[in-house]
Image (cartoon, rainbow, N blue to C red; front, top):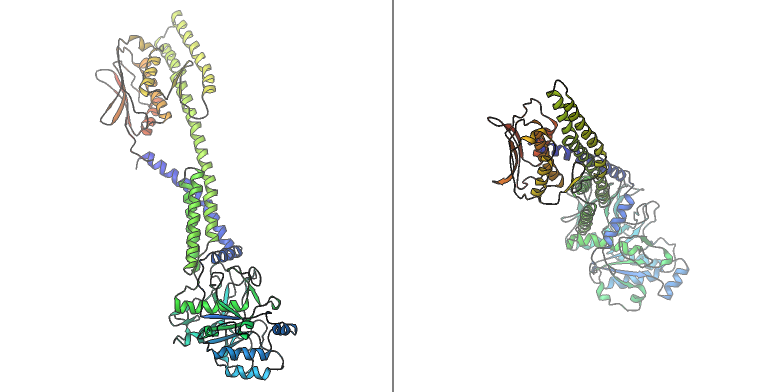
Amino acid sequence: MQPGIWKRFKEEITIWRVGALPGMALMGLVIIARLTGAMQSLEWLAFDHFLRLRPTEPIDERIILVEINEDDPRIRQNYAINSAISDQDLAQLLLKLNKYQPRVIGLDIYRNLPVNPGYDELVKVLSETKNLVAIEKVLPDSVPPPPTLSPEQIGFADQLPDSDGKLRRSLLSTPSPSSPEYKFSLSLRLAEIYLAKAGITLENGIRDRHALRFGKTELPRFSPNAGGYVRTDAGGVQVLLNFRSGKNRFQTVSLYDIQNNKFNLELIRDRIVIIGITSPSRKDFITTSAIESNKPAPGRVYGVEIQAHAVSQIISAVLDNRPLLNTWSDIYEYLWIIGWGILGIASARLTKSPLGNFFIVLCASCSLITISYLSLIWGWWIPFVPAFLVLILNGIELTALYQNDHALRLGIKARQAIIERSFETIHNGPLQNLAKVLKLVRDQKNSSPELLTEIEHELEKLNLELRGIYEFLQREPPHQDNSLYLGSSLVLNLQDPLHEILYQVYTYTLEREFPCFTTIGIRIRNFEPIDKRHLTTEQKRSLCRFLEEALCNVGKHATGVTRLEVNCSSSEGWYTLSIIDDGLGVASSTEGRGTQQFRNLARQLRGKFRRVPLSPKGTLCELSWPMRKFWFW
């Protein structure tokens, strides 16, 4: 690998390391925050919001809700005596519903009232209705089920709201506090009876022996760290509740309409009928933000509808292949988060401007939102909030870091350029005159008045030129401009054609008072046009300084020179700038500062430099570079 490429490669590695370390630290902080549960509420909020944005689903016509509310004057009277419906009215309702052969009836009303008129009739109807499932309460305090029912006709109605008071999980089974037997939920009992008629029975899971399964459909069991949850109680068998989307999710009919025959009871045949209370005064509702709801209030859903959602998600998954909600294992979730964090680091490093980085981060964020949303529609809850945070924070914060690093490097480069130009000005001006004075002193062992006069003259010029450096630095801007300063009076525009600029440098330099210039009798010059589109301003300035330095060396060291040839031409895809003289020259074993600069210039241009003696005498100083750039560093 070439030295320049290797140097650039090491710089890139350093820059990546500088950006990657804070980026990885930020990802670590986000992951730690997630592990401590600090992001749980945000992840729940995003989860609910994505569920609300899902496309509207059709009504599940297999479920009918019978609402007991205050539309009936008799029901209002029952409310007044602290009972939603009398035992006699409930018995008559069950008889009327069962007459139209529903597949199963769910009674989502606690029935532990003392003996009252109609009690015996209700007990008789309950014992004769074999497709009925009534509710009990088991957690934390118990409420017994109605009497005379078999264990298969009893399901608990307990729900598990999260710490923010909103429901996202469905408890399907749990050990009983008072007995070693497992209790089943109302929704699971209803689904079990409904699917049994289709020959599908409830069994233990295959992949997870503690899960529940209907046929080939295994209900994914909730784990303590599922999705956005952190160390949550996963006792019993729980599943994430995949609410049915849309405003109208189930068919509903009021008790008053059934009693007054305002409903086509034939629609009840072979359906799941769930009876429940839908009155705000009874406060039988659950808070959720996963679905739209206006009854009993925005963000609240009646308990009987929650039971319908829990039943619907099971039978829809078994019969319609509607997805149940799954989550990844912890390792895949954190690899997902780290992957988006690395994307944020890469976008910050690879973009050249804050606006470009903003566009890339915006596109990546939209992609993340789309992927998370579509995944939830397909049944997968993947981490969104932590992935979004590491993407945005790394993308934006590290952009500022990289931009600052870039500005710092540009400042260092500009400062170095000023130093180089200042040295070139001193080297090609005062130092050249100083070298001439030193040569005069060395050549003359005995000082004569004429020599002293000449030395005094040269030292005076040197004094003026050194004092002129301050003026030069005052005119030089702190950044790269389009001017080239020669001496204290000549300013060249580097935007002019390069061959014209080189000719002006050639003319100016040969007018300087160097001893060897006085013996030149033949001057040959050729400056062909040069395509400067692939040259930077600094590279054009350096080419001019190269020509000036090479000519100054001829004026100082080419003793006895009579012929000078300066040629700038193109051949076979290369430009060549050469200076040839027939003087004696100077043989030196050490490489001066000027020669080092020429070699650096050749490396920048991906070209070649050489300075060689000619036979029988003379020196060739030559710089060549390719017409076009074929490198990418």
